[in-house]
Amino acid sequence: MANETNLESAKKMLEVIPMVMGGVGREMRKRQVLDVSMPQFRALMTIRFHPEIPMSGIAKHLDVTLSSASKLIDGLVDRGWVQRAESVDDRRKTLLSLSPAGKEVIEEHHKAKLKYFTELLKDLTDEECIILHKAGNILHTIFAPMEPEHIKIMRQGEMK
Image (cartoon, rainbow, N blue to C red; front, side, top):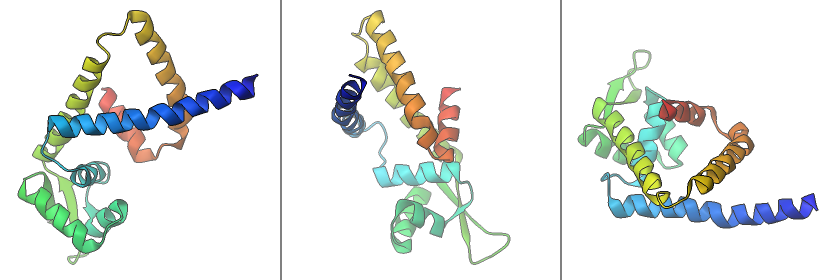
């Protein structure tokens, strides 16, 4: 019986998780809370957790060419969200870090997601919220060990 229940739970996860991820992404784009593309946001998040990352590191992390990464970063620098600095060890290397404005962009995005989820759950009963919270704890227990270290650090920062 447990195997059948596990199978049904796995099917439900395969159904619901893409729906949740897609819904959040569509809603954030629709609300245009921040005028930032997904590649730009990924670059900002990468720089957040890898301060002073070289341009080649951004390209590798985003799985794009060095020239594509450079164009992407140019746009973020122009907006005042990213700062470039010459490496002390190797003057040929440019290191990237977030500006205070870039940190604020990330914070505003987090606040927008939190507001969206709060609105989304407003009609749930207390009992349904408790069930959802328990389900979230179960999913956390399952997936947390698989999460990369820099994402774990990010989540700890968001919980404060």
